[in-house]
Amino acid sequence: MILISLVNDLQVSIVSVGYSQSELLKKEVFLVELVDSIYKSKEPMSHLKAVYFLSPTSENIQHLRQQLASPRFGEYHLSVADEQEVVQQIQEFYADFVAIDPYHFTLNMPSNHIYMLPAVVDPSNSQHFCDRVKLMYQQESGLFDFRRMEVSALLLVIDRRDDPVTPLLNQWTYQAMVHELIDIQDNKVDLRNIGKLPKDQQEVVLSSEQDAFFKANMYENFGDIGMNINMVEDMAKFVDKYPEYRKMHGNVSKHVTLVTEMSKIVEGRKLMLVSETEQELACNGGQVAAFEAVTNLLNNESVSDIDRLRIVMLYALRYEKESPVQLMQLFNNLASRSAKYKPGLVQFVLKQAGVDKRTGDLFGNRDLLNIARNMARGLKGVENVYTQHQPLLFQTMESISKGWLRDVDYPYFFIFIFSLRKCKKGHGMTKRRPKRNKINMYKRKTKTNEIQLKGNLLPLPQEVFIFIVGGTTYEESRSVALQNASNSGICFILGGSVVLNSKRQS
Image (cartoon, rainbow, N blue to C red):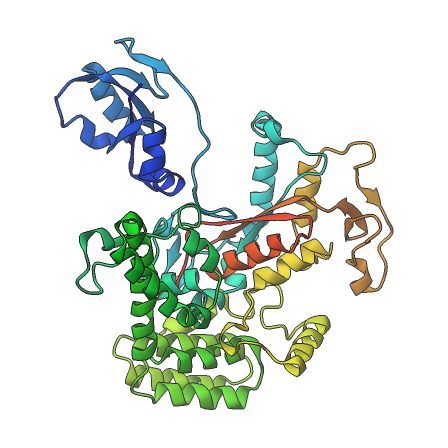
């Protein structure tokens, strides 16, 4: 049986990330075309069966009406009726997301963020949002019956502005670094602008499902990748000599090309020097030393305009309240040295994601426990100064695993969980009198494996879906993968409106 699969622009990403061309061929899908291009061809293909994978938009329906009026294919499998009686099957698939990694998905909504700072949720609408989700869950409960669990999954919706730092940092692990320095879109990397390359290497695929080398190294730091580059080059030379291994050549050579290109960018932009200051700003205190380091970078002619801008943004996010005078000096210095600097851009970042707009403890300097944790880390030291930063999401997952989510930071957490959980005998919530000690109030009850919030005990979830409004980063997806590998008993899935890097803009 021969099949043809017809998709629109939105579904191209979903299908291309989920299936390679060879996998589609194994499913007898021999041709994939955009729905709006099908009607331009008049050649009848009645020997083929057409599978339409579409979003229910008026534009798509109009294309279908035109094609069903004069059908080209023997059978149609889609989601509308027809007068020619060629539609054989109607199905509804919930596939409005792109599964870029086993624990990471995106909605591919680039219009949902602005230059280096995503759009955010209006705090006044958070309660309304939770109520709408609850209502949808109740009205469409049948949609969730296929995987009922005794302990409900947790959906945690997070505002990107709670952690504006992570998307601004240079990255030093393989996948995140490729996205920051070159860009990844739907697991594809466009290399046409980096020099003369063979046609089959001008766009390469980076998928942990299809590339064993990438799967093994996607979370490794750049230093380790660099140490192994000679081994990779030796592999490339080997497969050139032996024709039976020639099919491996493309997979090997693309990694050689990527690592080589990133090495050039790192050297040309002096990113090791820049990144060291970034990491100090993100992870350690010391305003005086930070101001001196940022000033030195601004005065360094080898530092690019985009890196100057990011470093001032990071300083502003950390010390906006402590050093307004020095901050103004940095603004003036930046404006005088960076021709592309837009006046007021750093101030806009502070307006949207400054300390007064954020919840949680981004820099670990609000909560006594976080302060103690940072002091302990400072005494112990770090293995790699360039990868010492941990996104705020890491702390959130750690708090969930320990049954310790503060209602101060997640004011609608309890309301949402209560609305989703159907209480069963032995699995309901037990009312406990709140303790006066605020810290003990949220402490996990290890014997009962429960979360305690406002004196209410909730079973720890087995699955946690974390959605970041405004976009995710590959550094955060790495944290999720490592957390899942720790065997905490909870599976975390990360999703967002788009995958960010420091340069991506609307």
